[in-house]
Amino acid sequence: MNTKNYGIALIGCGAMGAAHLDDIYYKENVSIQYVCDYDADRARAFARKYGAKKTESDYQKVVADPTVDIVIIATYPQSHLEILEACIQHGKHVICEKPIATSLAEGEKIVQLIKSNPQCKVLIGYILRHNQTYQKIAQMIQNDAIGKPIVMRMTQNHHTMNWQKYLSLIKDTSPIVDCGVHYIDVMHWVTGAEVTEVSGIGLKTEKDVPDGNYNYGLMTAKLSDGSIAYYEAGWSNTIAASNVKEFMGPKGRIRITLQMNRFEHQEEGDLIEYYTYPEQEYKIINVNCKRKPTGAQLDKLIEMIEKDVPATPTIDEVWNSFKWAVKADEIIKGGLS
Image 1 (cartoon, rainbow, N blue to C red):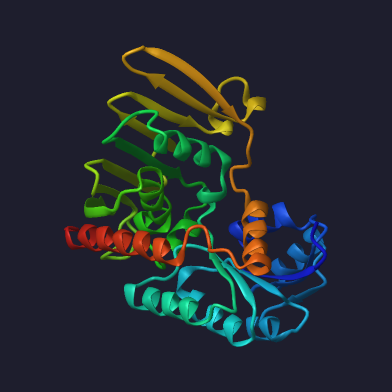
Image 2: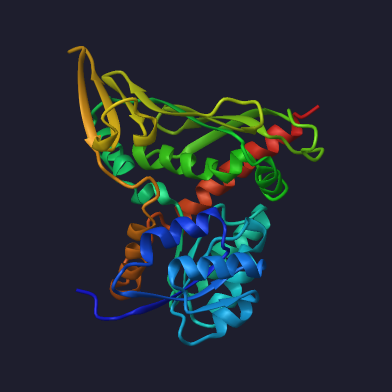
């Protein structure tokens, strides 16, 4: 039973900031001290919705306040380093959204900052590590449910209904890096193997995407155990939305269908379809979990604070997924015509 009440500050009142507060504001061991955004109206709207005690547009004032114990950084990657530096300067614990930075140089600085200040617990927001569906498939694959080596097929395409939002994000990070860090981490997590090689192709299909950038990318990867994977990510006014997560090995196949994509039995949660070979049998596994379990993620940070346990994933695993995503991004950008 938790006895400490943690003062929380959210910096960045966008979609991911809302996802964090949706799942944590009701917790008995949490009080929302601040919501902070450069858009004062948006911060006030968040304060009304989530019962935050104060609003602010200057994050420096937020992190300096002694009533704040934990800061959630839910801004675009370009600001992560400077906000994290301020948090650590003031002794705050942090959940920082992914990707950690916009460049390898900034990413290295963040990794060293976290390693050099173990008194401040920092958890990078790799939400899939805290998702019960992905935890289940990781356990299955690690227990040899489909054998090895395996093929991993991963697609995350967005038919954008708010193009300006995605265009702003493209100017800060690419589709392959933004969520690709999640799925490179999944490749390592479920297999226990290391990525050894990446490649990729991409294209700019929207005229207002800045030159040298792209809104559609396809990354391929090889792993040290012989497994291979691809990750496809597109943000476009014309692409069809799709979400494919499939793991295929010599002994079977595992496929995830998210709760929101099920045609029936949505009340059962996510669907894991497990096909075994040579038995040629299908097994259905339902996992009733939250798509973005930010509450479980916060619980993990509090466990890190109170019990001094490692982060999940570790900062070395975060760095590993980030550097390979950046490598794939560089290859894709280098091939743009």
